[in-house]
Image (cartoon, rainbow, N blue to C red; front, side, top):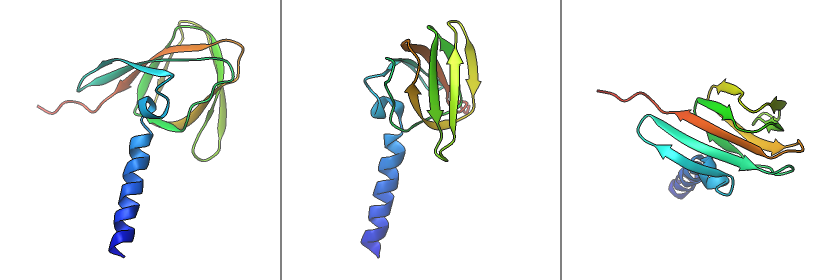
Length: 119
């Protein structure tokens, strides 16, 4: 029983860690800036490319190029999103898989919000 509990905790920790987009899709995400308040990521992909399931805390996304993609949520719901260059979007915390279903590369900057610093 004790070893089963340890195994479950290790698997849960590995899953939580694996949902960091830098770890799941390091070929598509790049950290531009990180401190105790924000993590700024650059994301780019090509038509037809797909991410692994990953998680973002609440974030703001700034679109550098037009693109179309689907977002698949953990419950299986699929959302189709289309953006123009210069679009800005707010999102609450989200776990998803993203697929570029358009004819152009995706190129965005994502500002992930961290918990406020306690003084």
